[in-house]
Image (cartoon, rainbow, N blue to C red; front, side):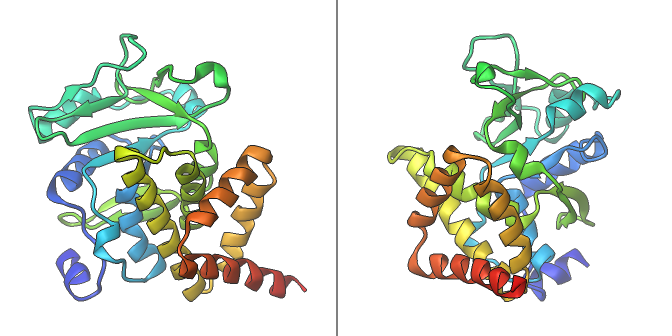
Length: 266
């Protein structure tokens, strides 16, 4: 069935390494413990969530990003097996990456081919910037606290990663993903790998704005857009800056989504 969906339905399967990594994490209880798959692998699943075809240049990746709410990890009362053990069952060359803070904690793991698995969590205060958060549910892994992540991982959706017989996963709501990408893009630098990631952020946001408009989900987008807009000056500045980076078609689709919701509210 998975091969039929990818071959005839235009849906997207991850590369083999990504699929095997997600399968191992899922078998270890990641999604049962309310972990959320974010980043490009999550974006790949939106072909199925939204019933649209995604252009191939927007969906390539060399890493897997996973988020978990800090309070959930602290209070869930359960834990995955050791993360390193799960990853080494996929590829024995996976190793923990020393944290940039110098602390004896690991929030990312990398194999000999530079494939990276990174764990992230929501940040409650600037006091925790660049400091790894201990995550009791993540099998010995810590997570990097990131600003704006709480917005992204609120009200996630269930879907399937098309690998082998299919892997049930949890991903961000596509409207939240798109708005979050605008904000994240606005905070990246203009050089090197950061610029490459920024361009990818904007490309994915634009694709989702078009898909959301085509599938008549404008109201969903408008709700989360307004939520982000009401969160303060830094959020509004990020949205404005990110939207300004969109190509003309992307800005047109975003405006059409917001206008469509406004028209329905009259």
